[in-house]
Image (cartoon, rainbow, N blue to C red; front, side, top):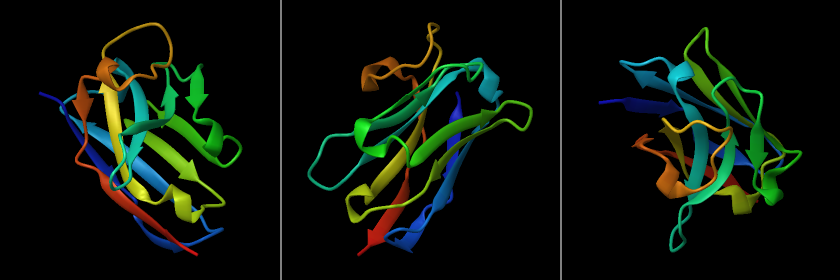
Length: 125
């Protein structure tokens, strides 16, 4: 059983930055394609960004393009989400997810096998 452990959430003012981290316990991150999802109250969970196993392919939700960067450090067994120029509408619980599927970055929630517990990101105006 893979456990994904997220860290780095918090409360920030609009325009500031946060970096989220995710590390799997008991497995190496290079074994999985990975993604970051988020869920605000009353909404469905949505993909923010995804990355392939080797990191060569990435995908971003339109509203975060140019502001967020997903990256992975397979040597240090960690996935990151750098979030710059944060907006109040980015407020949500952010989840790290991993899939054993091959074939690049994966965008659908049901393609992912493992999920973290979530970390709250709150952006004040």
